[in-house]
Length: 472
Image (cartoon, rainbow, N blue to C red):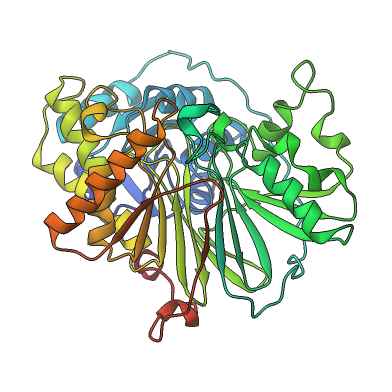
């Protein structure tokens, strides 16, 4: 009897696929995360591994690479990856990581079994795979010491709010043209969300504020698209050895975090390499979806965006700050892809799968004091940008209302949107809230805007209560 290792967090999809495999005579081993999946595949020398791309501890891209690096599995084990998004870049990256096939969720029984027969049939076909070099795990670092008073009220400040490319000029003076960067101060920590061009003025401000005194910052990278990392080479604190700069993120579809950050600083693109920066810099690739920065609890979740993109939820004594910089709602994506004939006919299974994925995001941001979320398009613009990995204001407001968040800030403004266009989106969002009969404050993220969060009398975040998703 042949052995298959099935790695998927989605219990409904996992149960269905396991049933199909068992009916076909397979011995099915189940794993909830990529690390466990690899252990089972090695221990049982599995003939097949089926894994989702977005998993905790070891994502699907990493699992593909590790299977191909194991001598016992390299030419013995076939790999089928599954993805909820179906982005062409994800498929390409999966094949380059070592996958033999890629299927879009929700899986269809006939299509799946047909592929399984073709893939596992008696064949002399040689599957050519690109060998990926194993990236060494970065050394563990001690928790960053507080740079601020522990009892200072939590603060959120926007330093970059634009998406895609920096957009200076008269039309964007009010909301700003720098790309993604948000500063959160809580529990004595300075936490920076993404390193777009907004991190350059933030770095200069920090150097002036601390006036030659050493300090520590932690940068959370959502993903490594240019508009979220391009400002780091100009982050002044990284050029001073007395400062500690801790960079945290998750391994991408192709390269590790350190490799990606350093590649943009290689000659001929930049005059100094990452390794030559004199600052005390550490780069950590997380495996778990929750961790601590000093005494501050942080949760992470996968978003629907090409490649790997993470959202973060930072717990503060005054409520959670949720940051979802690039995200396309699953239900909108699946439905419109079908309507515009860019995908297979919609099925009840597809609708239910998309609903579960969107509910996962709602649970993640549930009750947040502040939600900063990708709202790049209005509803009309979205029609011609389906599958680009970004959301529209209608969906954002509906999500915020469903999650009972207190304040939502439209973020990742389109580079073509003037201040007046963003104003109109805010106005529509506020009207939409009234139509829904909800009580959510709608604003647009604006460079220089600072929020001072005040603890509510009955806010569970004061006790570090995890989001609903973390409870599952």
